[in-house]
Length: 315
Length: 241
Image (cartoon, rainbow over the protein chains, first blue to last red):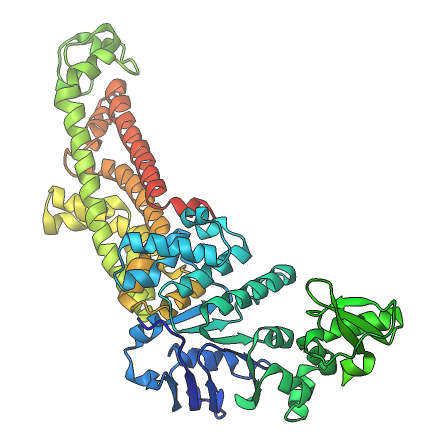
């Protein structure tokens, strides 16, 4: 079992389904650095799920190659390959006849881990995904949708895989719980630093979750692969600009915080005060709402750090 | 046998024994008779009946399971196999016995062949349906986690099909217990023996009919309850959905 995060390389990866003229994934080349989240996003028919399933060979490649830490997926035993990759899907697919602990122990059992090891690992993972250890003995039918998805994530992490594939993991969950799961997933990722390929059709989720975003267009062609910031500020073409939306400037503002600005010294009294970790988008919203031109940025301890003007925010 | 009267005394038919008042009046349940003939009539018949059922359901399950594996793994075989068990099921039991007698004679084997062929229908259908009912996302996650085909079958598909399979076993067992009584049409065997005997009396021997028929009903009910308990114990998760 490898444990560190692995680098993932798509090298001209191509999938043409039998009997189809056009490719589902067309000469896709991109590198996901170890420990980063790469979000595959695009309209339906863009081949994002196909691209994801090429990695663990649920769908066989018809051309090109995919390498994990330099080793081609084609050179590995397919069952062994899949056990070394965490896999999370939208419908979760927990085994209804197994307890939460039994589900989490699925891959460790394939590695013949002893029962005591699985018990301890399951308790550890439940805590990691924010569930009480008492959940270990429950059956999937006794869990809510959000809880099931957490267990699905814990199960995928059980054998500590260096690479995680997540296919619209939060797609079937209501918006409030989804936002919380996204936040917790990002917090978790800071701890475990896996390489993650994450499929979604939701641009906002892609921007929130991704270290890098790969935008796929119809026919499985890569339209742009870049950081969220770059994609929002410098979309490669009309298609990308259209796809990320007219409000992409605002979305870009949401990615940065007041603390990242160069502030000028405070000269004026009575300015609205905002903490340094406020996003530029929220700060602008406040200025618009209060009909003001500048605000005072304060530190975590409440001490003033300096002034930011509308021009600073929009620069 | 015409003209024969209970009141005449004499134990012409051995099952009657020496009559109490209850027997002379052909009462519905003469406990003295039941006590007297538990050892030589009722108990042996009950044991034979249980044997008939266990062997028929056991062999039927083994055959149905193998057929179901084929029908499940290779879909093309499912319709013909289903139709085959269906046809066996539709043959009336007495007709089937008569068809078999020239081949296997008036033996317990003949009875078992008929009983087994009746269990196949419900068992085959239930096993295949249970295996097919596993949700696709469960199979996808099993595959995605690196379970081999064999592991997926043994650890996921089979346990998930267990409630349907056990339900099939319940129906097959209860049906076999009831059909097995008709076996006595062929030879004196199982609870059907005393039932047919009682029916063969000019006046219908009520106590024997009720005792042996009641035993068959009790056997069916207890088998059903036992399998229901087994189902609960083996698949605690299945009642949660």
